[in-house]
Amino acid sequence: MSQHQHRASHQGHDHGQKHEGHDHGQTQPGHDHGQKHEGHHHDGAHPDWSEMALLLERQAEIASPAYTEAAAWLGTLVPVYGVRRVLDVGSGPGVVTSLLAEAFPAAETVAVDGSPELLLRARDRAEARGLGARFATLHAELPAAIGTLGEADLVWAGNSLHHIGDQRAALAEFAALLRPGGLIALVEGGLPTRHLPRHIGIGRPGLEARLDAAHAHGFGRMRAELPGSVDEPEDWRALLTSAGLTPAGTRTFLTDVPAPVSPVVRELAVSHHQRLREGLGDRIDADDRKTLDVLLDPADERSLHHRTDLFHLTARTVHTARKG
Image (cartoon, rainbow, N blue to C red):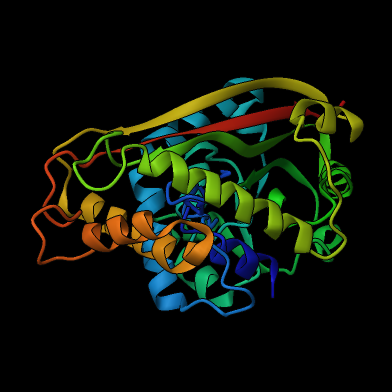
């Protein structure tokens, strides 16, 4: 399975985006960024890209204000017009790639991913936004191809590093791509996505907290099964320092869509819970499976299709470090 397929299959809890965020980050919908990234693993099954791409795009589009804010913040850490080449590593369908291209108007921005289908969508999005002249795509299987990506002034890795077995080694390789003064922006961690209050009137209160616990177990299993997996504490500042970089700041960006939500946000919540229901299986108890079945039944007034208490709330953390 490619780096991107690992990531996408992890997505129900995302990216986004790309997403994920599970997001332990993207990789919850909303773990994200149009970036693939997260909640379940289908144990080697290849995702349906037509379905997955739309899900990833919607996750990232909902989170776009947060990612736009993050890109603007990066522009305070490096000279905006001094950034000539940007790599979006694990770009998915390129929602964030286009945002980065807009934030750094003198740069060639490159969407890097293991899925040609998603790179095509990234290209189409950039063309539609008038960015085609400064936009490129690069099909690459990571981590093997990191050394072939070329130099960059900014490397954005949005919920993609945790899909690489040896994260410390990968960071060292990314650091080697940076030009002097260049910046890496690592999107990892944050908070799990929330769609519902603690007490929803169905089953036991606290459903989403239990789903998060099951997802965290699955995330750990996914990490352990990656080729060359290293059990590495997620001290991102220390890992960036170990790669020879100087930490430049960490910030967390909020996506807050309160009730009542739009039909697109509602549909995303339904997709998120459907993937959780399919992906977590017997890792959740029978009562919670029954609750999810009610939430996913469009004929039931208590379902996600009709609820008035549905919202979308998540936070994504961006860790930065500079070369030299």
